[in-house]
Length: 573
Ligand code: ARG
Image 1 (cartoon, rainbow, N blue to C red):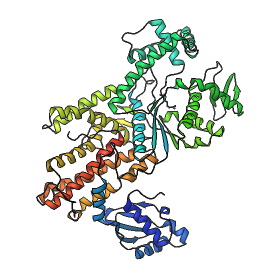
Image 2: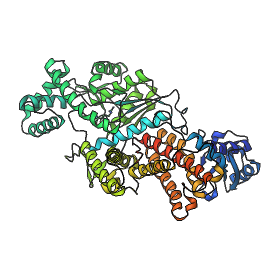
Image 3: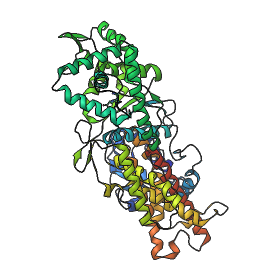
Image 4: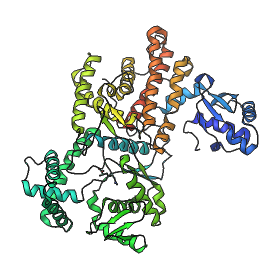
């Protein structure tokens, strides 16, 4: 286990290690089951093996040897664990100093930016197919991938966010055949392209000449026929223009947009590579690589290559271009076999780096209990979902906060609406399905994006009301209430949560953390309703300054955390 980024937790591992003369990274630091027991728990199980002692006896030995060290105030043995308490004053001071923004959005001195130093991560995400709507089911790849890009970047990794645009294959020939037969739609937009394709599919059932025409057009495209190329380019531009609008709404920027088409030139080389290594087998005129049943189809009997062949070329290209430490493919779990075979084929060919490639699968999205998808005919357009979310969040804000100015409300409406949709996709565990219900997604007091954004806006409002910060360092000694410590204790975990979310490709860990933090904050904040002396903006200047500093720290973590998940953090809503 690497040492926790939180220096107080790291001190607990070091205290144990020192007492037993072992290495700190052999121990895992967690939270005790109940907060009354302490702040950090370290299990003595690794010591039992190395020191040949029973964990409870070792725990006692560690607790007896413990001396306060500036980070930790006390240690107590509890069965096979030692529970440590942080030096609270030092912890508050640490947070006041570190929980400050200033750098790039999403950056925080609480997040260990050295963790990924010198390492490169490729993240293939969103990657829609052109000439089709970016429908609601694409959002999970887009949202999860974007969060993984931002999480890794915050940890100091070099990140290459890649859109592997689906712009090649026989469907594109079919589209051209449809265009030839039924004429150019006006306007030529993505809806028209989508409709053309659907019509082609329907009519091809009764008219086999259509399929042949589609194949012929794709052949022309492959052979570089200028008319076919020009048409395809046009379809691609129209599609990308549409996708771009949605990415802009979400604040998503790709470092590389490379379509499948761009790997065409590499196809003969990829096929040759597998042939030369003796890994390609003939099968009814086709070439296959024997990884699984059915095997990976390298080249069809008509000479055409496949989605798999292009992914082989893509993986090689990424390795040569970026020399990645991790290469992630954020693609729905229905493509699990595709990626398993892809990585197996690369391993078979002797590429050790294939072990660094990971499929990051995710579950489906259901709207009103129904699966969404272009093939299921239940297509829900992302831009319509966003528009609806924006309308609903505007209404919600008017209801909750009638004093909010018109300009502020209309600026916040898309941030809250789109943010709610994004958050809903990150709240569910990645591999679980998402049941999308508006009431839940926008519920300002539920497990929702708006709930976290409201927490942030509340911090902003308190700080606004307080006016200019008083000079001098706040005195942490004035933060004596247990509810204040609970907030601080939670804040200390932030950097390690970000690290775990990135390393495990589990952005939902951060969503849950932010919800918990808002809960702790709200429990502290609402104490002031019953007892004015506990208000943040109380009369006592010293207590007020210290509480404001804690509010500032909460605001910092909420705003950077929301950014890492791909959400905005309005100052008022
Ligand atoms: N375009 C594909 C689809 O929509 C996803 C591509 C994912 N990335 C990849 N390298 N295969 O199903």
